[in-house]
Amino acid sequence: MKIFETHAHYDDESFNEDRDHLITEMLGASGIIDSIVNIGASLKGCKDSLALAAKYDKVYAVIGIHPSDVEALTLNDIEWLGENAIKNPKVLAIGEIGLDYHYEKPSKSIQKKWFIEQIALAKKVNKPIVVHSREACQDTITIMKQEDAKSVGGIVHCYSYTKETAKDFLEMGFYFGIGGVITFKNAKKLVEAVEYIPMDKLLLETDSPYLAPEPNRGKRNDSTNIPFIAEKIAQIKGISTAQVIDKTNENARKVFHLIQ
Image (cartoon, rainbow, N blue to C red; front, top):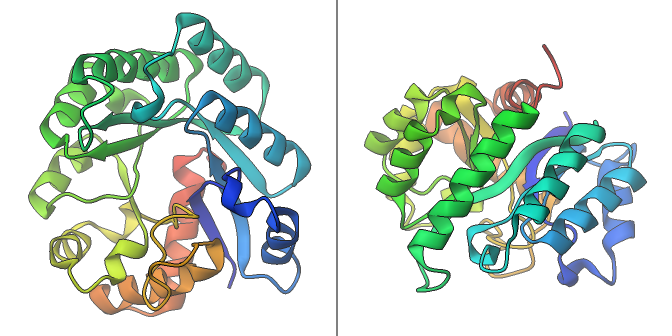
């Protein structure tokens, strides 16, 4: 059974030497991947994501500016994102956007400003959002509620908070991207969250080239590692890996409006 990869960065320079070969193999007749959503994080990353979506039938793009890259962002850039989101049917969402307080810069106020702007953009172009939230749980939830992110919906990517926090995102109708971290030995909090989150709100993702699952932790990640994630979720949920893949594929098509 082929798998829907909801979050990868194949524009990353770590794929420069084998990008085309890898994507062609994964999406080929003998590959295990059905579709790939390539996620923009910088303006260059967004342009590269659009190029990948144009090149490959089963690669889609999500365009938006990651909180770590918003320092030099302008309203003209937001306008460019909006134009491409409207005119290009392969742009599925606005992202990844959000808050990342792990580093001191950009400042929290700048990150919040552009998170709000990009939620507004998603509402304007009627696309879901892909949310990045790191060490910024309460501010993320507060902004999403204040700005009515529920009206567009979307994904909390690489979910890393508690099962209690998951309730807030579930109340807004959001899906949860689960990646390689679920296989780590120290992922007790995430395992508890995945136990709690209903199957119809879970998605498979790798965040390639980052966060490779066990047994490949520390290596460059790619979408061929998704079965390790699906197997772990199946173990947590007490169902088969095939059931996890089938349901998460359905969820992916729903959140990205690929099925009505």
